Length: 156
Image (cartoon, rainbow, N blue to C red; front, top):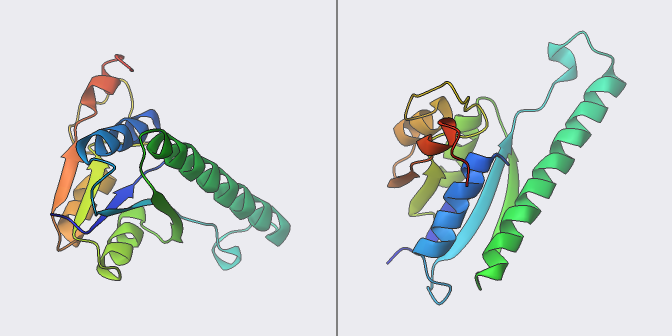
């Protein structure tokens, strides 16, 4: 049914849970391509008083962490027989970077967690700001995987 599914992740337990749900919802025998996407917001030398070397080191670390999170998610998909591609995109705000990637691809579905890295155990809002803004910015369906139980301290 779907040909290209984009799964935005951020390395958090909530986004991992959403990715697991995607791997279980869509059979490995499906014709759908799955792209795991992680958006980063880098520092710009011209926007900060930090030394350029500090900015470079920060951005390098950010990309390394993004690649590591994507590798972990891709390994989880591989265990379930899925072949996925991974991609790091840059932008600010994060939701716009995700939406731009969706718009510039042939994606026909986005699947993401209701909350991500910004989720706090005391925060009971169902949708995080990135998820809400992605829903508002894209022209394809967005399947939202509820992860609010994690906020209640019931991590899986």
